[in-house]
Image 1 (cartoon, rainbow, N blue to C red):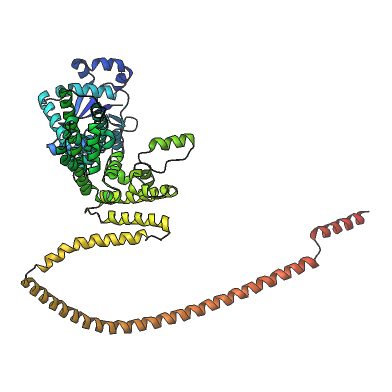
Image 2: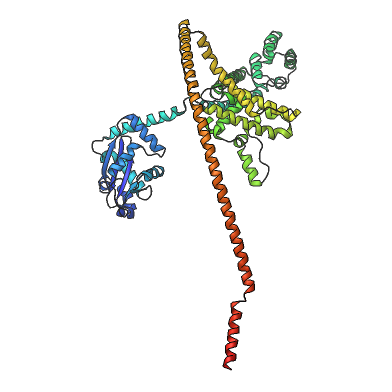
Length: 547
């Protein structure tokens, strides 16, 4: 059995033939030692064939097929031309690095066996190390450049794979939004604790983090709380009662005096908190725009943040579209699900979709029902967003109306509309939106085109008149033919009916004969004694004669 080793390089395909494959397999440790030395490794393998790639695009196409475990036509032709065909007892063995590619090669090439085990990984390691020296005319610098160029093009192709559905930006922005929320809360706690040494009463009056930071910047010290600051505080708080409470608390505060240097640091920190809050608002607007462009129906149905969290948890919009509604319902509650399965308890009713306003509006007994219904609609919306050619939020609005109707049904008992009727309305609305610009263009056309259309319509009318007259003539002819054919069919049916009646009468006669024959046989059996009795009488008469 001859062992051939296939090696895929950025410059082309190479096929190596091993010398004494059985000895190599028996002495695997020696092969591992010989890999580092080119002189020893050259005695183990020799180059059978080498086929370079024609262009960079051809190399990228071949390597993409190999990475997916598919057999490219170039590789198939290369192996068929260079792997010898032997009998069953002397089949050639081809060693490959990927088992999936080996299975694809085995399906196409029946006259050889494919393996990725045993000594093959060690031989491939040596080939990879000494490849530019084993192939004549290939320099090390050229091989490195080919690898670098192919690696860049392959990575670029993978990044551009989902160019029209850029949900990666949504995943990153929702992760950053959650991180900003945590950071703002942590920084606000630190800022309040730090400033409370000087003005502890302010925390109870102003609860919002951003508002607290802006008030701190307006009145860094209690000594600066004068009537001149009232207008600025009213602009920040929009509440005159709170402003009065701050003024009174500043006069009777129990806080200690603070060093100006410490106060400067607190102000810098408060500015940073305010800037983070403003950046969070801009990031939320960015997320709304991305969700509107990538998943408009899902964002319309369940909201920007909840929809983005679903996409982020699933990994992509495509993965979310592939999930069934039952998986979408408990997405984000995996720990609770497996804990319930382990302890044989109640499984969770909702995961990330709990943050939707619909579940909050439902009563306690209907939360599970509305979460299941909402997950069903989210699954439909994500599939429309992922696989629809044209983006539109019409389906999301209709699905949201359905969820609202279902909430009313749980509360008042009013029957909601059927899903098929709502989807038909949405499809009609999308189709009407597509037709509108076409109709506007038709109105703007010139009069010359209208004249041409009128002339074409007159010609069509003349053609239809001629075809109608011809049709009438042919109809008369075909009517006579149809009547004659009907008469022939009637005659055939009558003749067939007569034959069937004759067959039936013959069958009845045969049946009567069989019944009469059976009766006669029964009578004969009754009248005639059995044969055994006759034989006994004959024996008795014979014995009496002898006596």
